[in-house]
Length: 400
Image (tube, rainbow, N blue to C red):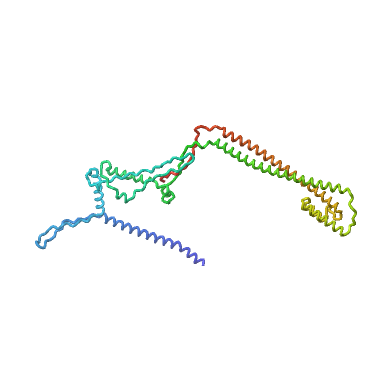
């Protein structure tokens, strides 16, 4: 297996050399054949024309020898071309002297193409518009063919050299004429035209200078900040007023609970009646405690934790006590709770008052700064004849 692979690999270079040799021989043969064919073609084109002399023919009637008409000599193609060029040159040399030639042979005056003009419309102080481009319509071939003939005069008849120069100039001008602005997006226009942006400078007196613009912007920002501070101060003021009303309501509720607790405390000075504690009496006292606790919770005098303590007979709530004692206990608990509510409301009211005071102070400070900034802007004299240059970019078509 290895020997076979080795023999195959050793034969590849020899085969490659043979193949390259054959390709080289074939190329050389084709080159030789092409050279022979070209030489034969050139020899045939440049071979001299042999013109036969006069032919002599024997007349069958008279037996005399008569000179026959000479045969037409073959004309070479190169000689025909040279003759045509010589005739054209002679006609061009005689052109200035032919003033009485027919009108159909006179040279017509080519109308000159006008360059595109860019009309700059008058713009307002705060508006800028793009200049319109007027492009002459292209000359149609049919219209050129059917154009009326113009009489040949010394003004519109020029020598061939001048006419050729004018024709070249007109072609250059026609090439320089750009297409319409609307065709800028087409592929043909993208290949031939380029639209760089040229800066056009306008002058206006309505644009203020940079320092004044900064001051005006600063004054506007201060006015906006002052307005927002006023809204915040009003909201803080409303929150403080609500907290104050809550404090007043908590104080009123505490005073009512305090008066009720005082009556209960004064009634406790009298001893409670002695009643044997039977199961029925115990059940009645327990029911009374539950109903009184639930009623106090419904009025807001007890919180949920105190209600649970009363129903569970915890934290001083004892169903074995006399109903008068249970009522005094509930009123004392109500008074204590409403006192805590009043204290919490008073603390919240003081915090709301501090927030409102700070917001009002911030509003006053911003109002003063905004007034000063506005006064500085209004008091500053406007410089006379100050104008700002605005760069307005307009597309200008140019030939790449």
